[in-house]
Each structure stands twice: as structure tokens, then as C-alpha cells.
Length: 467
Image (cartoon, rainbow, N blue to C red; front, side):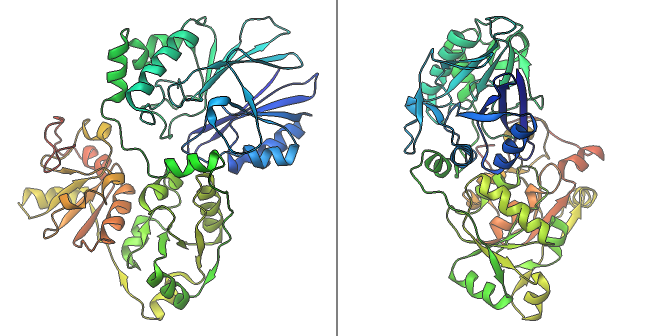
């Protein structure tokens, strides 16, 4: 057996190339749109022909590369019949087996995360009949289980049934390889480990410690973060219900960019928060290209379908941004500012700034009783681990929708873990005309390192009733 796991560190997506060297064939599982050339190179390097492409479920966080890969290798795309896809494919069903040389793939239908979710028991028949490992898709992660919010409490009950019917009866030694790891929005508190065993998960996975169905459902449904706004669009594209396109950005002069912004284009500023804060285009959304989950953050902060103009430090950042955004189906990229801020400023078009302050400065302001509102844009799990007393909790992805909770007439110091999400949230809120911002560089990480006080009571949420 040949086994290769392919990790996309930016998104936490995991895909697999599994084959038989004697047969010279391989199956690719959960291919990503931006990784197709890599699968082709890997297969060629190992002397394999890709004969099958298998999806463990309809993905909602990234665009699948199944059709691009199928076109390149002329292999069938296999999905569970419940997927309801509109492109050419072959259905697989519960109990079905696919054999490639000495490798057997046995399908188990495991609805929960999605109705079409499957797990794949993989056996090396040269070693024995029992499964060596299981590809769990998004039903079971290392340290977590899949989000049920695509189907609500009913989906959580389905997940309980699938886990107890298919996975938990397996031997402790069976290895576990999921479709996502840390960094993905498809689960919570996932481990950075890319593999595990049934025994380890049975013992340490918090969701699997719950012996009663209702307790499991309540656990999964509690404090679910909001569903990313791009999920439905991505699902539509992955089902073939929305056409796939490729971005072809062209260079824009400052004058052309100004005219495009007046028509509704949004400037996506890829520069770091400090550079953005020094001077930026009025109304630009700031997501640093080096940010974790860069593409997912863009999709969460930019209105769906809005045409984008990219502003970058250099050409390589532009290429990276286009590729990363294509992975999640954000292809509405009109172009990029050819001469960046230099020409924009020389033409006299509007610019704005966001002052950057240190955690020590914020602490001094609060000690002096200065009238400043502290806004914490981290997620709930980070908030309850420790936050500044009296802070307003406004998670980044909810910031624009909950802007009514922002005190517009007071100075506002915004912080996250390190200063990246805070800059993004500020840029989104500035688009709604709210001014008076300070970005806390270093964020809560710096605040805690300096030993400044924090509170851990989840009820102390400032003006935010949903903290």
C-alpha cells in the first residue's frame, strides 16, 4: 500500500492519495481545488495512475478539486447518493467495496455532519482482512467531531448514531485520518495532530466521553459559532449548482480603482496591520496575506459576490491571494492596484489611518480612567479563558452585523490574540462610518505576558449579551 496525506496548513484541509504499487493505481480522497497539480506530481513520482476520486462528503469550507482532477486523469468521481450533485459522477452506497490491487476501500454511510457523509475503511489485503485505518471525513476529527449546525439537532442525533454504529465498535488499534485538522471551521477545538487511533479518541475525545445521546446532542449544539456566510455558496459550487469560474485579475490604475470603488468594488488590503494602519484606502478591508485562515477570513468579512480589488506589497502576495481565494470559491477578483498606495496618494484620493497602540498603553489608559471602550474580537472559547474586565465581546465574524453594540461616540481600543483579527474587524466596522479606532498590537497575548489583570467569568461580557 502507498499512503500519502496532503495537508493544507492554511485551511486545515486534509486529502489523501492511497494506492497499490503492484497495481500501479491510486484513489484520491477529498481533493482540494488548489492542490490538483500536487496530486498529479505525487502519483507520477510514485508510478501510479489515479483511477478513482472519492469525496467523503459535500464540503462547505472549500471548493473541491474533483472535477479538475477528473478532467486531468479521466477517472470517475465517487460520492454518496445523498450528495445530490449535478455533475457526472458515480454513486457509492453503504457497504460497497472498491478494490485497487491489494487495497480495499469499504464504504460506510455516516450521516451527521452532512446527510451524504461517509467513512472509508481501508484494508491492506496483503496483511489481512481487517481495516488498517479509517478515513473519517468530517464525522470524527482528532479531538473533536463535525459541526452539526448544517442540519441542527437532528444532524447531531445522526452523528451520535453514526459514531456508535460505525466507528466506536472498531478495534482500538485502527488508525483515524479525518478530512480536516486544526484551522478548519468544520469543527471545534481540533487537534493539530493529523492522525489518531480509535482507542485514543475513545479515551480522550470530549464528545466521545458522553454516554447518553441527549448529552451528546446538547454538547454539540452548545455555543456553536455562527455558520460562515460563504458555506452555502461553496456547497452550491461543490454540488455543481453554481458554476465554477477562474479569477482573471487585471492591473488597475488609481483612477480606474477609484471609479470601481464608486461602483461598489471593495478594496482588499493584503498588507500587515501596521502598514495598513499608517495609511490605507478609505473603505478597504484589511486581511493580511500571512494571517492564519487568510481566505476564510476574507470570505467571512467581504459581502458574498462583491467584486474585489487587491492591494498588496508585491506580486507574489497577489498570486498567493488569488490561489487561496479560489480554494474557497471567491473568484470575483476584478483586479489589483498596479502602483499601490503610491499612485493612489499622488492622485489625491481619500486615505485614512488606524493608530496602533501597545497593550501597555491600553493598560495605562484604563488605569488613568480614560474614556475608552475595549472591544475583544476573539472567539467565545478564547474569551472565557480570560478577558479584560468590562470589555465588549464582539467576535470578528459577527462584528459588522452587531455594529449597533459599538459605542460610536467613544474612542475604541480593539484587540484579539495578537493584533490581526482586530485590524480586520476595525476595517469592516469603518466601512459603516464608525470612527475613533485604536488597534492593540500584540493583543491579549501581550496583555497576559505583561501580567495585566483578566477575568474569566463568562457572564462578565460588557454590553454584549451573547459573549
